[in-house]
Image (spheres, one colour):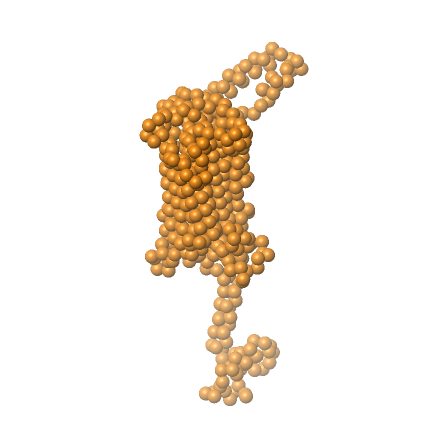
Length: 481
């Protein structure tokens, strides 16, 4: 068929063939005729092809950015946030919020989530389980977020997740070792899951800092206001939540695993469960908790602690405090059950209430301690710590012991640890343990260091450097503390 003869009988298939010829047969005379006769059609085809190529090269609808750390994807609305999902090509990218985001399911386009919003569980039949960005956790395959997410001071509001049998539930399902989440706020969220449940993350192995959350959480096992289970680093975070569960439930973190660190964090709210219930952490393994506090109400049918419910199986708790009101069969103002741990420079001032023991808590174990409810068979120490010895038990008697009960063979050393009044604790005028008032403690240390410095300088003038005794030299060389 000649191009000049084309007309009403020109078939679509032939038009397509000529368009292809026009692009592929360079130098043929027919190109000039086609460009003249079908110019508009050709230009339209090229434009459509360009649009398709662009959409293939940049399939996401983020505001801007390339996803690299120096140029993160910018997120300004719910649609952009949700498209991260469990897309493995995005799990190592960087993101930043440029505005507050409302995930209210009642808004147009809103919905109730049945999995985590980001890095959620994946279909095992359709996934490559050998991919390093997919792991098995809690009995399910889940994508691993290994990128960075900066809230930039913005908040994600009204997130609702309803997954009664779900594992790894939260805004992030699984946060990997290399992931960093920073400066993010979650407000008025509601999350329901079965295991590893938190408003911000179900499981965290990375670094989460300067973030906060508020709302309600329910999880049968390992539920926390901010994080369900954590092996990573959590710094300068806050939780104002209502957390309800059965086992291993905490106001900030449900389960703090080995090598975890929680530094300068706060938890305030109501924490309720059956066992291993803590105002800050439900159960703690070998890890470190420094400069943290908990307040609100903690209630358990068995063991409960103002700061940590069960464990700690090692590590240290340093410069922490609890003012939480605690109720349980085995209650500690700071820790419910402790073993293989060191507690230093801490205090507890909450009202403590003991109840009749049931289940795994035996009569000889039940009790209320100013700092620890029960010390399990192991070694450990409590140093320079104090508790409110006027705190009421069932509205009547006073707390006169640091540790309520000990198992046979348990060896815990109490060093400069005593009960004190609230006035002594607040003014740091009581025992050395109550120097947790940082301003008073700082002045005390500065004064002591100045005095030591003057003494050392005087000795140095009187003694030749070669005749100085080893211990004097060690004093001069030691760093400030």
